[in-house]
Image 1 (cartoon, rainbow, N blue to C red):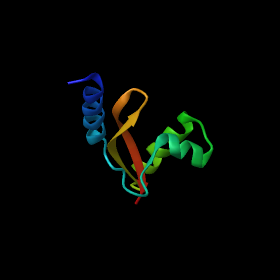
Image 2: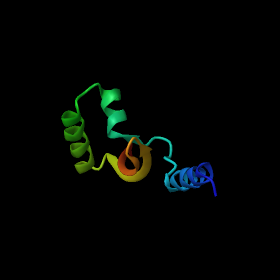
Image 3: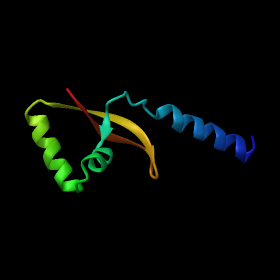
Image 4: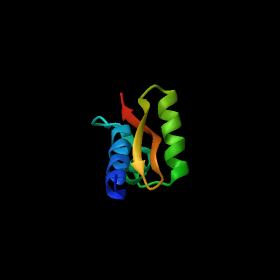
Length: 77
């Protein structure tokens, strides 16, 4: 088996490990941009919203520069 075939198999296996993120779920980085705030401020606001049961959080596996990693996503209830 050639190196290209191995690379294709690896790429497909990584792709299969990614989750499909449902609509209305946003990562913290996306929320930072929407709110135009820093990481710390976004974390503080999200923590408060979760405590008041206004926001739902769920972990999805997404592909980034490091590979496929679990990342928290948030959705308004």
